[in-house]
Image (cartoon, rainbow, N blue to C red; front, side, top):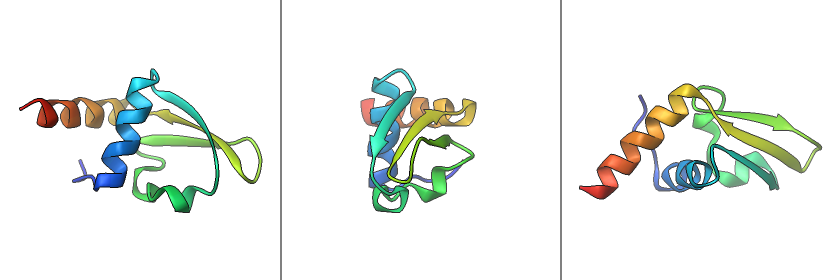
Length: 72
C-alpha cells in the first residue's frame, strides 16, 4: 500500500464520499493522482477532457486506512 500524498488523500476522500464513483472534467495529470491509477482508482475516459473515476477494491482499503488515520 502506498503512502498517499495530500492531493491523493483528498481525491480518495472525495471518491469515497460519492460512493466510490466520480465524473470529472480536466486532465488527469493536473489532479496529481497518477500513482493511484489503475491499482487504487480506475479511470474511464469519456472524452479527451472528461473521465469517470471509480475506486477499486484496493482503493476502498486505502480509503478506510485514510479515514482511520484522520479519526485518530
